[in-house]
Length: 310
Image (cartoon, rainbow, N blue to C red; front, side, top):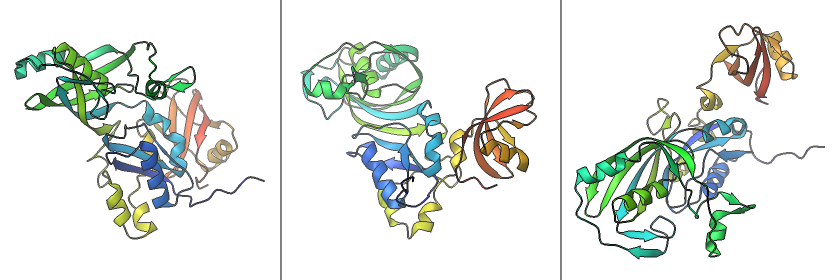
């Protein structure tokens, strides 16, 4: 007999404004408890020192969270020149102090421009990547250093926002897998001063920003806790299908729906869609999950909701 899950069957996506000093997992568990949800997951870790956009998936939304792991991101960070730390941020130990040369905005802009486009980046030791089954940051805390292969990333845009003495604010639009700490360190090296970051805020993940999806915006934990009752909290959740809104959609009839939920392919005109195309499936206005195109008139179930209504 299957073990009964504790909590409520809450389904949807919350855009959390993660506070500084809290791990992504701690923030996730706080949200899960606030919603009394059976299941919860996030869509990409933020460092404890970082703040900003952390989409939290509740219930059936966790089935589709992987689609945001591949998403592009936008960050704002404060880069401090002249000080190099072991972690690449202000929470690390200072390894070296350097004199900052006299730099103009144009000097900084010219160096930043060198890091736009497809570039090679070596992941930092203080990261959650694994080496022989152990996370790199765990090895780093033991005083160990391992060679890391450079990875290809894309920096779609990087621009200087403001300057304050030997520090400046930078906004970066980038692909998944980009380490902003490392980018800042590399820019600092190219400027001849070295650098670390003292603040980091994620502004956007995939299609989700503070002002996206109409009335839905980012919620702080304090604001969420202040909402009165479960119904008020659930009213602020985005529907599950926002996670796959970039995929084409198909509507299926009652008979097709019954075939799909029993693991069988359905006959459906999928003209114009290539073989193996992922598609959103709807029965009426209800999202029922994802299908995959298997022929000119055939779609097979890929990932369906348990809560979809017949």
